Amino acid sequence: MIQEQTVLITGANKGIGYEAARQLGQQGYYIFLGARQQTNGQQAVEQLQSEGIRAEYVHIDVTDPATIQSAAEQIRQQSGSLDVLINNAGIAMGGNVPSEQSIEEIRSVYEVNVFGTIQVIQAMLPLLKEAPQGRIVNVSSGLGSLAFNSDPAHEHYGANPLGYNSSKTAMNAVTVLFAKEFTDTPLKINSVDPGYTATDLNGNSGPRTVEHSAGTVIGLAVIDENGPSGQFFDETGPIPW
View 1 (cartoon, one colour):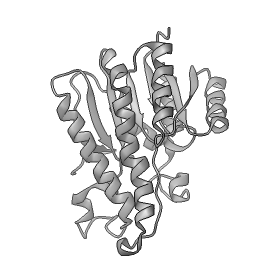
View 2 (tube, helix red, strand yellow; view 1 turned 180 degrees about the horizontal axis):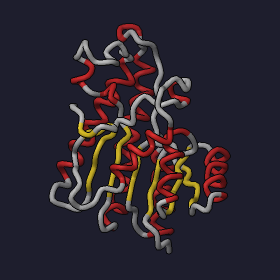
View 3 (tube, helix red, strand yellow; view 1 turned 180 degrees about the vertical axis):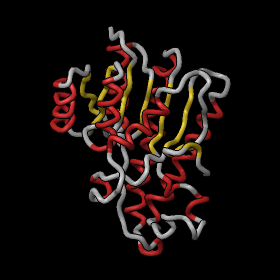
């Protein structure tokens, strides 16, 4: 059985997810690297292993309940518990005009960003409850903040993709409701906005590096028993819903 603290990161074969795996691995965590495609996931695991990080590939497609359940069983057999879950998998599609985005595109975004997150949390909760201090970090976005979306002075006020923005708002609601359920328990659940980061999601146009943004994400993964739960953070601290 694995003796180190463990973390499952979805969508971790590249970008912020991969870098979060690398940084947590450097801190001594055993990495369950979640990815849809085995080739990509295994290559990412081999790269981590070449740096001396203990990691293994977990086949998980957050839109496929069978892979989610098999991932939970793999982790149960390997460690019996899970210390940290980072829901990093996410997609964006469609243009910037809400009235023109198709409902099919919006559904596709919600399947990953919202329903996928819920399914993974529900499947991993028994393992997280077995850990001394389970942690869930939902990788959201400032574009999901209703306060930011309604503030003409905010820097991203003009970013208006209906499916993506509203899916991250819904993800934040998921965070709040699960956190309420586990109030007064060791389990802590938070949302994080890693910031506009250069990744494939945005054509590598963001000004932040994955190294910087991954640090923001894992800051919530390693909070102690006095840390927050049911809140929304970026690199500066708490931000409005």
